[in-house]
Amino acid sequence: MFKNIAKDEKLLLKEQVAYQTGQVVSKTLVQNDKLSVTIFSFDKGEEISTHASGGDAMVTVLEGVGKFTVGGKVHLLKEGETLIMPKDIPHAVFGAEKFKMLLLVSF
Image 1 (cartoon, helix red, strand yellow):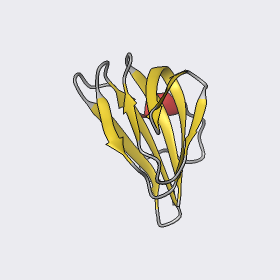
Image 2 (cartoon, one colour; image 1 turned 45 degrees about the vertical axis):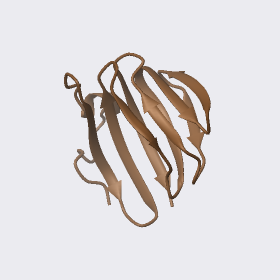
Image 3 (spheres, one colour; image 1 turned 120 degrees about the vertical axis):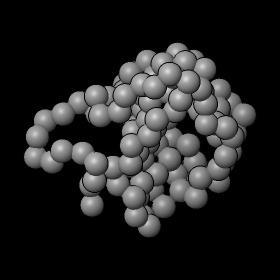
C-alpha cells in the first residue's frame, strides 16, 4: 500500500521531500480508489491553482506557512496546523513562504 518511503523505521515526513527553487515538489505515498497520501514542498511564491477534489482533503502543514483558499475563504496555516477541504469545493494552495505539507484525500 505505501510506496516511496521507508518502512519499519522512524522518520520525519518533512524530510521526505526536498525544496526545489521555483517549484512545487510532490511525493506520493499511497494512491488507490479510496485514499491518496502525498507530501509536498512549495518554494516561496509557488502555487497549485484553484481546483476541486473528488474527495474530502485534509492538509497538515509540516514546516513553514501555507495559504489555503477554500470556497473563497483564506486560511494561513503554520507548522502543525490542519485544515479539511470538503469534496467538490474549489480550493487553491500558495506558498506564502517555503513550506511543506501532508495531503490526505479520502474518496
